[in-house]
Image 1 (tube, helix red, strand yellow):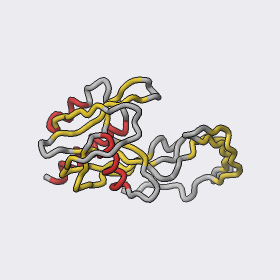
Image 2 (cartoon, rainbow, N blue to C red; image 1 turned 180 degrees about the vertical axis):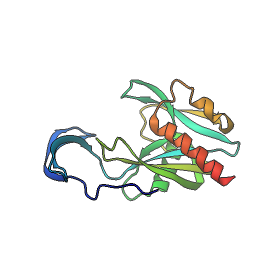
Image 3 (cartoon, one colour; image 1 turned 135 degrees about the vertical axis):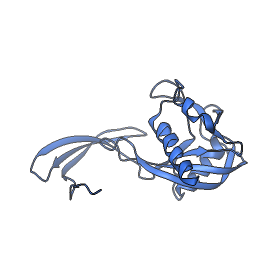
Image 4 (cartoon, one colour; image 1 turned 60 degrees about the horizontal axis):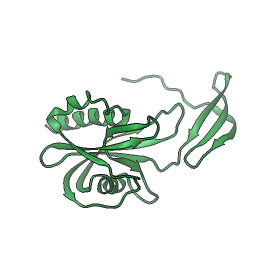
Length: 187
């Protein structure tokens, strides 16, 4: 199925940094669209390296999740291991490092499920969703302020994970759905 696409994005007439913190740079953009319409948008400039989320599956067909503090919601959330890709790392290398830091396991096999955009209207960030299999014990020290709680979840009960009050992060929910498609295609 082919759909009509816009040939070019709007022209950026002017760009100003309007706020900056240790983590974020907020820009104001003056844009002119192909039809002559002019608008001002704000966006958070991304770091460019991207991030990774890993869906680990054990030999016993269990998903490994972590429960960690999330400052944005000021509570603990259950989700898949994730983190930024360090300079010089591939997504798979970053995924393996994050697994070792957050759940004390490495993986021999990684498959990329999809690369997602995060709030593309406001943020230029991408997250690589990987599935990890053939896990082995290995730990690395991470940068979390407190130990993460590792939660094992039976793969065949994946739908009940969606009913958990603390499993609400859209990226983790998307990863779970992408995993189902991946596993169905392998059958």
